[in-house]
Image 1: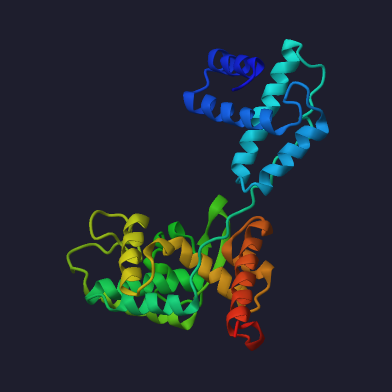
Image 2: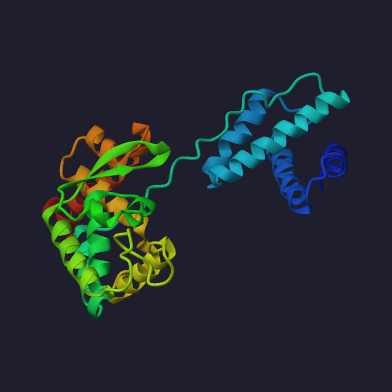
Length: 299
């Protein structure tokens, strides 16, 4: 059972701040937890007691998001208590928000990329040639899906080794094309040109939409990748156009590429955004050592 002060606080949240029933329920649970976890309860707690309760939330397995909400509930409760004159101090004032962390991006192994390409090539006719070109380009260049699908056909007619891409904020950068990607693009151009009706004006897009005058949509590309992943024996939830960009960055770093070079190739304004891939690469290398090194085996 919650204290009268907690009940008054929740009533204030409902009446004055129009808090939703969901929010009120969550805050009620959070404050009840604090009331039972802080020595003497919230109304007589000192800073050490509140901080000890809060520090124990992580040890109990609560997520950073839940810890943050409990901190917010207690902080707001004590502000209310100060305003009501119930307390003359705020013992929660030094509680720091927990570090949320940044989720590691999904990626694919080199073998999985190869299997995805093989499955893409198995599609009939022009659809297979186009999908191979899409996957090869995404993986070789690290382009965002919007940048990839917005490529103009004239940008690749002369078989360039680099593409000039206009990314976020209108900033231009160079995106590399390896021999495999260039071969796939040339095959697609041949198929694309052969399938165009002479009386129909050529689309400016490298990957035109079969309907309308625009280019292929990100949604359609994602659908094609899903089917290729299934054919390749890969969980489709792990595959997307953006995952190919992640694979590009991760495999470069695993191969010893400089972080600043990868930052430039990805078009990241802040190197901290690129550094997340170093964790992926390190985790994969550590896993490889654990599974392959003879002294790491459990025999």
